[in-house]
Length: 332
Image (tube, rainbow, N blue to C red):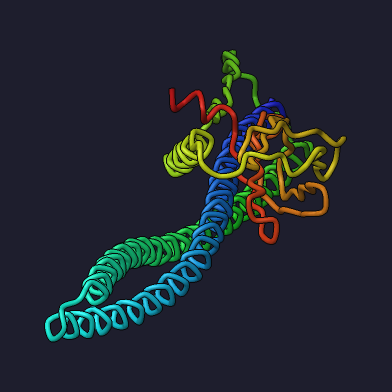
C-alpha cells in the first residue's frame, strides 16, 4: 500500500510539472513572438529611414539647383536694373523716340527679372522648408530606431531570463523526481509484519488536474498598424497623383521566397507593384528579380497571407514594403 501511495504521488508530480512546463513553454512562445514583432518593426523603420534618406538626396540636389538658378537670376536682375537707370538717364537728357523705346524695353526687362527673382526665391524657400521637415523626420526616425533596438535588446534579455527560469525549474523537478524514486525504492523493501488491528479504509486517489495552457492570442502591434496606415496613405496619394510618368518599368517582376515557387507582382502604376502571398516564420530572404531583401516573420504569422509592395521609382535603391493582410482588416 505504501508503494502505491508513493507511485500516486510521483505520477501526480509528473502531471503537475507537465502542466507547468507546458505553460512555461507557452509563455516562452509569447515572448519569442514579441521579439519577432519588435524585429519586424525595426526592419520596417529601417525601410522608412532609407526612404527619407533617398528623399533628402533628391531635395539636396533640388536645393543646390534652385540656389544656382536664383544666383543667375539675381545677376540678370542687377544687369536689368543698371540698364533701366542708364535708359532713364539718357531719356531724361535727350528725349527721343529711340530713347523712349529703350526705356520701355528696359522697364519690361527689369520687371521680368524682378518677377523671376521673386518666383525663384519663393521656390527656394519652399524647398528649404521641405528639406528641414525631412531632416526633422530623419532625426525622429533615427530616435525611433534607437528606441526599437533598445526594446529588442531588452526582449532578448527577457527571453534569456525565461529560459534560465525554465532550466532552473527543470533541474528542481529532476531533483524531486530523484527523491521520489529513492523513496519508492525504500518503500519497496520488505518490512516485518504488523499486528492486524481494525481495518483501515483505503484513501481515495486524488486526481490532480494539469493547469490549463493559456491560449496565445494574436497581438496586433499598434506600431505595425500605424506603419500599415502610413504606407496605405502613401500609396493612395502616389497613385492618385496625375503628374509624372506612369509607365511600367518591368514586364515581369517575380518574388522568390527562401523556399517556394516564384510569384508574379501586379503593376499598380507609378512604378508600384503589389503581391499577396503566404509566408513562413523565421528569418526569410525574398528575392525580387536581382534584388534581395531580408525580413523577419513571427512564428504566429506562419502560413499567414502578407501584402508585398515593391516601390521601383529608384532602381538604385528600390523599396520593399510588406505587412500581414489581417492588419488591413484591423484598420477597417
